[in-house]
Amino acid sequence: MNVAAGNPDFDASVVDHARKDFPLLDVTMTVGEALEHIRHEGVGERVIYFYVIDEQKRLVGVVPTRRLLTVPLEASLRQIMVPRVVAVPATATVLDACEFFVLYKFLAFPVVDEQRRVIGIIDANLFAEEILEAGESEDRYRSASPVGPEFFEALGFRIEQIRGASPWRIFRFRFPWLLVTVTGGTLSAVLAGFFQATLTRSLVLAFFLTMVLGLNESVSAQSMSVTIHALRSVTVTWRWLATAFRREVATAILLGVACGFIVGVIAWFWRNDIRAAFVIGGSIGVSLVTACALGLGVPSLLHRLKLDPKIAAGPVTLALADFVALVIYFTTAWLVLR
Image 1 (cartoon, rainbow, N blue to C red):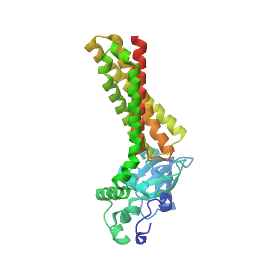
Image 2: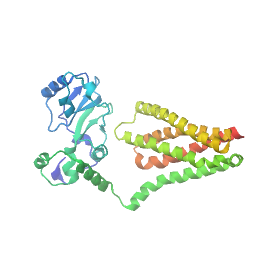
Image 3: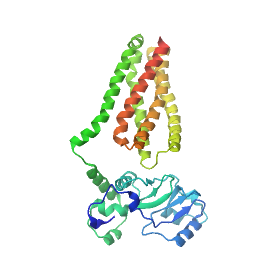
Image 4: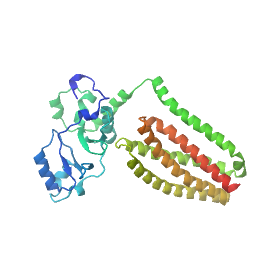
């Protein structure tokens, strides 16, 4: 990126600005072999992390420079590397990369393709002068102290300025998605009307309705937040989706059993109605599984459709989670209490 050129092009591909002068280390190497490989291949202007790849050249870990220089030479890279690596996808823009620095506070990120192969590296020095608009020369900046927290704070502030828009424009962008919530609430009210007789037979169901919806919204929001966070550094594929889905379902079953059992016991002791307690606890257990699935599936689908999951996923996910929870709740009550 060229400081003299004025404002940077934040919509440009991050690949165009990634450094290519970096060595990659094989996961089967020892520390001594890795250091010898680095001496032979050479390093770029500034190396903060060394990235580790497997036999298929896919990114599998990262080794901070300090760790590489302080562990015994016979240690294996597999033992000392950090296996979970935050990587910038090759499809990202410069602005996306800036957000990575603000979000994760790392000083460098690998840029990877769809197969997780490293095609470049970006570091904080690449963006500091232009984003902060310090007006300092390149030599003066490089002789300064390492990038500190103020860099990330200023970077985040600058991104907010770039993202800024008028209230009317923000309204037009956000309001259509809020209509999803209005629509979902209306459908839920209509659905409750169909089961009016069931609610009349057991008023305790109405007492716990708010709790059922609150638990579903909380769990779906948690899953949605985790998913949106993960989508910043992964490419949505069927394999990734299947793995994430299995993990979320397993978590949801544990949450559903725990919450459903506790609430069911509370309802039983309070109203001494075992059937109503079964309806409340059982429907909570089942609906929390669907809430987790929606928290994962909706942001992933929106991301795949090139829509912003941070804005759209919330209203859509919560509306669907509420509606599905009510369908499960009322249907279970109708089957058990009729």
